[in-house]
Length: 128
Image 1: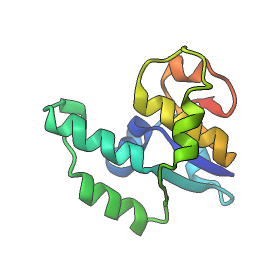
Image 2: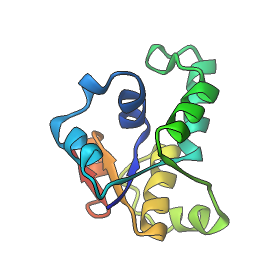
Image 3: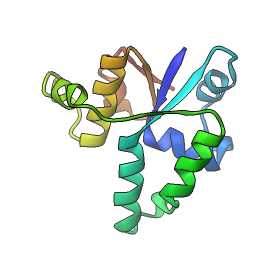
């Protein structure tokens, strides 16, 4: 299964795996799981770190390098992804979460999230 991690799950997987919900940890450990992170999540970390958000005090470059080193695939943002955002119902206002959802739809990925608003979209989101 090709799985795109939302930003919070990605941060937890990288630095505090004990914070991952059991379902997310189980998916991550499954042999057939291909873990994927989006460039949008790296951008979100850069922006929120720069704003001083306590939950984003991470070096984005080290995060990216560590994810790649541990077998995560990186997903770039394309114009097709950006255009797909306009087709999403306005259930969630966060632009990073919306692009993650659009990427999951366009690339036939499962988007793992702990965000109930994002999970309300249903597949391809999977609330863990």
